[in-house]
Image (tube, rainbow over all chains, first blue to last red; front, side):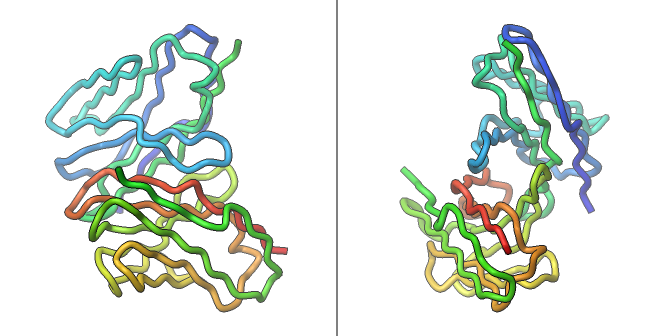
Length: 110
Length: 113
């Protein structure tokens, strides 16, 4: 089955860029998503990329997709303390299902 | 606009007691519905999903069951809770068809004593 891996922790200084990485083992051609989870809350859809794209930019967020290497990344420019959260990538795991990564806890230092 | 509601927000239950968590969606019809469990500091484990009333797919064998009595209502149940059932339970919905984005409720924190 699909396996989705993320590094567990990332620490950056306020104002720097953050890059959160995600690798997966198998995926059909469709959308791939990034979610943000703040403490004690549900997951909030942040952004997505369609599998025929290499890059998508949405304000401070940039998603990069390398289909050959099965590697997805989320770059947050000018990281703020409010960006501190857990970030999940989600890749297709079947017609109606997504497989979520293990989550990366981003800590932004003031 | 579409909204999703989960309740209760927190629940403390003794081992062996029953469980009923409810999730409802507003502003859409025939959504796909999902139940996930998130153990502390861990990723999401898909428990059940439903593509229509009365249609339930179970992803992992466990002490829990799910039901969809109405189009926009999804219930997670147990007859006898185990200590291992503790966790953060999340309900989500997506649009009809494959690979639509999922939208999550605020979750229920379940503690088993």
